[in-house]
View 1 (cartoon, one colour):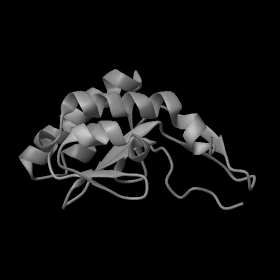
View 2 (view 1 turned 45 degrees about the horizontal axis):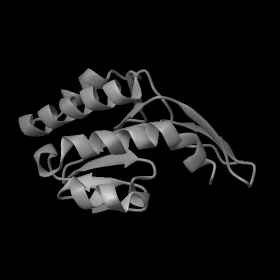
View 3 (view 1 turned 60 degrees about the vertical axis):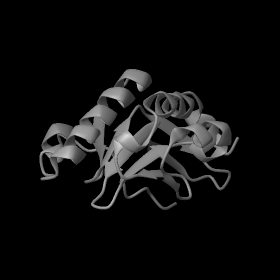
Length: 139
């Protein structure tokens, strides 16, 4: 079985965020950290070199492949912030109220936090935290 390349690390989240020179991006990321910590009731941990994740979930695919992942997370990128909110794309009603974003296969992409509604984002984060195991296990 192939292992996940992205794993939880001991890298400091604060040190990672200090590597960015864009102060607005850092402020947005600090706000997202606070929100995700509050909703997930989990500390921020680095996953790989560029993803900040909250909470742990172990999952197993029908193929037998197993892995560990986070319940919710994000990654600041040069062009946008990638939000890893499982099941978000399933919540069309909430997405309709979220604001300005794009979606990928399993991510939401935002340019800046002020483009979206914090309350809706918080609800999507809660959905991801509450349902991560079911979603990852294909239920």
